[in-house]
Amino acid sequence: MRPTVTALAALALAALLPFAAGPAAISAAAAADDPFADARAAMVRAVALDAEQTAVWIGKSALAPRVMEAMGRVPRHLFVPPELQSLAYENRPLPIGYGQTISQPYIVALMTDLLAPEPGDMAFELGTGSAYQAAVLAELVAEVKTIEIVPPLATNAARRLELLGYDNVEVRAGDGYHGWPEHAPFDVIVVTAAASHVPPPLIAQLRPGGRMVIPVGSPFLTQQLLLVEKGTDGTVTSRQILPVIFVPLTGGH
Ligand code: SAH
Image (cartoon, rainbow, N blue to C red; front, side, top):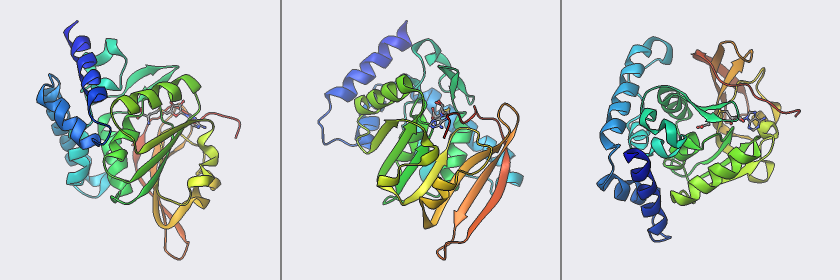
């Protein structure tokens, strides 16, 4: 099948690039011969339209340009199972195996925008999954630390990120509820599984002035996407953004 062959070529190209080439360089090189370029541009337009249509919830009608640019660079077709590549740029979640999903592009873009990531930031993600969200963040911050509870997903995610040249992301298999204390504090934290509450270890590992985005509510029902902010004086406030549906946070904690 043509898309599969081309995807392999894109991976091979990424693997051949010099070690020093960063993610942006690789994306640009891959884009030169990328049959998914038009589909990806259409996905970015769909995300922009969703932002416009949800303006009343998100308090603005457009997401940050650097977030939209990152969405336009990350090759989502290389983060989904090969048999679903033709659907990779639809603005919808897709299964990635083990009962898990890669989030809808609009939700990834919105969560990233709410984090207001800065180039020097240290980021933490709970729920690596396919590593798509991690890759989008990696385009925008200095370092991403991400934890996945399903070991084979963590292994595949690490391999994928390495092939694509995302050398500023570190993946660990384990229960992300406890954060990653060795790398704390984090400027931004994103939780991509539905939690019943905001995990206290993550609040503790958020830098004063930092932001966390997390879906909170009952698993399998609708959750509220929360933006949690820690003031420079340590005061924590949270704001509901919009209803979302995520796979549940698991693990014994
Ligand atoms: N961010 C992912 C979406 C992942 S779906 C992407 O861009 O593809 C949520 C993921 O969270 C699943 O892979 C699930 O296995 C993982 N997860 C659930 N509970 C977890 C926990 N306690 N610690 C770490 N990962 C967890």
